[in-house]
Length: 420
Image 1 (tube, rainbow, N blue to C red):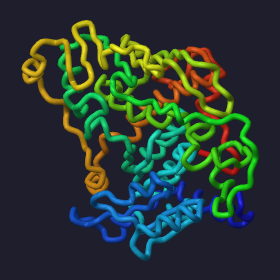
Image 2 (image 1 turned 60 degrees about the vertical axis):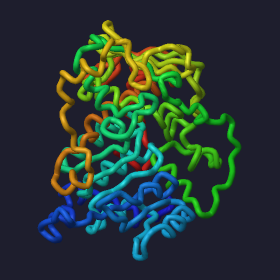
Image 3 (image 1 turned 90 degrees about the horizontal axis):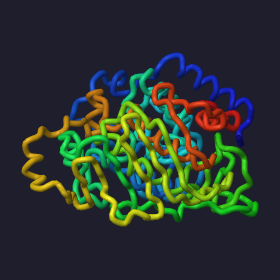
Image 4 (image 1 turned 135 degrees about the horizontal axis):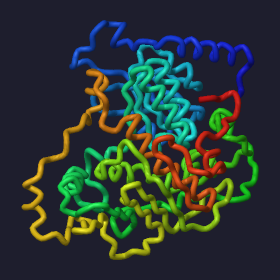
C-alpha cells in the first residue's frame, strides 16, 4: 500500500477498536430516535458508472464518496450537492458518525472486506452483485452482519420487483406456480438466451497482457487491494475487470446472481445449496476468464438449474416438471393455467423497502444469508470452471466433498496487509 507505517498502524488500531465494540449509528445515539419522515444518509464506495448510477434512491442522500481514482471522484462530485466529503481510503469513510448506509459499488474482490468492515463500524450495507468473490468471503460477511446487528441488502432485485427478463412477469406468479405443485417435482430450470437471458460472454479476459504504467489519477496498488499483484494493464481495471478471475468471473460473475437468485427463491432453496455442479467448457486460463457451454447444478431432491451458455436447447422450457412446463412470456402447456392458479394462495410478503428496513430494523428480502446462498451458486460454478471437473458439495458444511483443490478456492489467500 502507498501509506507509511505509522498511518497503517493507526488504521489497524482503529479497526481493532471497532471490532471490540460496535459504533452505534447517529440515528440511534446522535438524536435518539429517527422519525419515519427523516432522511437517511449514505456513503458510496466506488464511483465508477455503477456507483454513480446509485447516488439517488428514495429516502437517502449521499454525504460521502470514496474512490482510488481521482477522475472518478471528480466526475462524481459534479453530480452531487456541495459539501459531500471525499475519501481515498474507505476505512476512513466508514468511521464517519453521520453515515447510516454504506453502498459498496467496487469490483467484487473488494465486496467481502468492505462489507465486513462496514458492519463492524456499525453501518448498514447495500452491496452490488455478486455479493462476494468467494464462498468463504460470503460466510465472513454473513457472520459480521449478524454479529453486529446490521441491515444488509444485495443489489439484485428480481426476486421481488421488475419483469424477470424473458418471462414477461415478475417472479411472484412464478413462485406461486411452483408452490402450487401444478408443475410437479422435482423441477429443472434452464437459463439461456432462448429463455430470455444473456450470459454476456464479451466479459472475457485477455492473455499475455503487456505491462503498462498506471495513469497518475489511479492508485493501482490500492485498486488491487487483496488481489494478487499483477502488472497494470488498462484491460484489468474499470469497465473490463470482469474478465479476470482475481476480480470477478466473466459473464457468470456479472449476471449469475441476477439470474439465479430468483430461482433459489422460487424453488424454496434459500437455506441450502446444490450438492453437485458439472461443467462443459473449454479449459480455462489461470488468469483470464473464458467462455463455457453448460453448467449444471443438482440439488439433493433432484431439482436442477441448467446454465446453457451456447444456447443449445432452442426449445427448452424455462421450468420443466413431471406435470408441466413454463415457457418465456409465462406461457405454459398446462390448460387453463391462470384459472387454476387463482385457487392457490399468493407467496408470503417480503420486506422490499430498504430505507424502511433500516429505519425499523427489519430484515430485507434479499439479505446477507439468502444472498450468500445464491452467490454460492456463482462461486461453485466458477470453481468448477477453473478446475475443469465436476464437484460434490455439502450444503451444511459448505465444503466440497473429497476435493482439497476445490476447497482451497473457498478461502483464497489475500495480499497483505488485507485480511477478512
